[in-house]
Amino acid sequence: MNTEQFDGHTPGPWTLEEMEDDEGQQWFEVPAVHYTTKQSGDGSQQEYADAQLIAAAPDLLAALIKEREEVKRLRKTIERAVRHLHPEDFNVASASESNGFLLEKMWAATCALEGKEDW
Image (cartoon, rainbow, N blue to C red):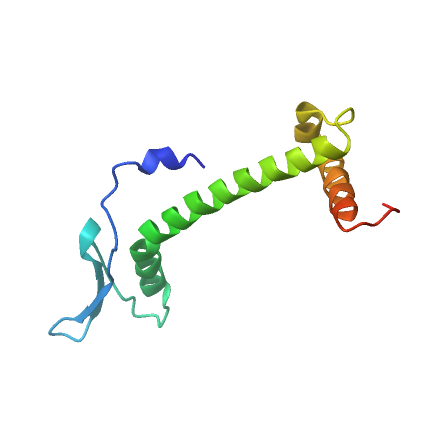
């Protein structure tokens, strides 16, 4: 997912408001993005769950971006550790093409850091 497509979105936090009209119909609104829906009469909670998800969107996007940065940082750390242990075997293209290769090297690096010989 390209998160840049969301650049310029309405800043959070977005709130979810619940209201009831004169006929007793329940409505859900996320005012920041002008989203309004009414509760269906079938007893389903889908409209409420959808409104909750929409209201949480800025926080979810921020968490996704933060986690992606952490994954990038961890990949760089693992690559440095693997290169240190076996620089002749490490090839970024191979690692990208083969998850097994990278997992094997990660396991070897972990074992080496823990002082284990048989990996």
